[in-house]
Image (cartoon, rainbow, N blue to C red; front, top):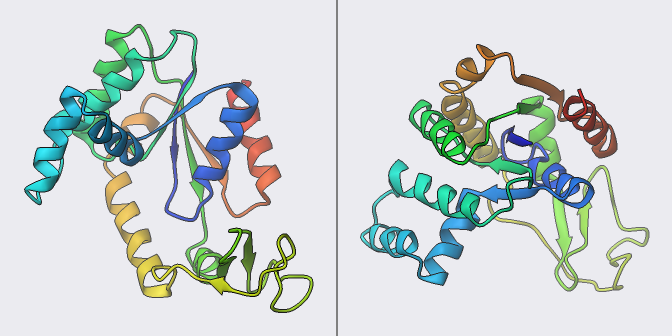
Length: 215
């Protein structure tokens, strides 16, 4: 099974992808991670990408498609794939169709995690983590049991991501809407898009996704 997970940063795509990896043995293909890995490994496509990035230019659709193709070629035919962060444009959607068809695969589902922008801003801007062990907390939803002390390692230092602020979150939301707007109609026309409430509890979102995949 081959699926695309869509949703703005903070919608929970990473969490849900990891659950599918653990429960179904699927493989998550995140273009950002794959580009970094290909550059590090020095693959032919990775070397091309490295030259482009070192020149301060954006990596082309051709290179991104090459990275995806390399990753697919390294998988067993029966291994399910979750595409994360790709495709982002109509041209990339067309490329993905060709990449899958060349390998006897097809896209089965496009799942969009829908979010309420104001609630997402609250979810993201309230996040903080233990500086020692990385345990996650939230100003409203998950405070440490003892104020100022990590539940897990009993550390007393906490940190926040500098980009977890309202202005950045709203900018990310606008970028997401601009980037996904061109590709959703392509998949809606094929009747393979399902929408899930990304603001629900993590387990409820997982159950909704599982129900879609089991249809």
